[in-house]
Length: 213
Image (cartoon, rainbow, N blue to C red; front, side, top):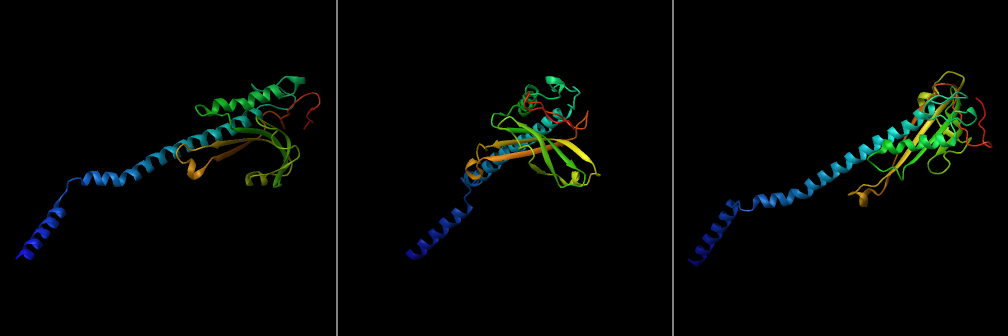
């Protein structure tokens, strides 16, 4: 009799437990909270990274665009220098490279490396040589060094070509995902043809007079 009573009580407890709904919402919330936070923080980090990548692309295009407005012995464009009547001097180059600070706003450009170079190549070539280069950190690409051309420029007709290459590298450190990813170097480049002459000259000082093109 006692065994039957104990069995009935156990079945009753199990039945009530199965029908109970108290605290279910709290348990469900506790289960999905980590996934919700991961999605929220991950989406925020992703959006921030994409915004910075867009800014870096714009920075590379900006330096190439500004430099390409200058020419060979003709002063054209806001940032072309006046030293010895040559298109770009060191002061003007600093202004061109410094323009990326405004482009990167509201993000800091303190650790971003920006380089602008002139490349020379012949139609049908797969690579170009560096004529001159300048950077906001270091000296840029070595003069005479090789640069692999994008496929679109390898199919140009025969002849000599000059182009301006703008490059920007931004060390992006995710706020939340640093432990997983570390610092990510975002690199973008852009190539522009000179607008007002065959090539663009860069005058550093009297000891570094650029050759004519």
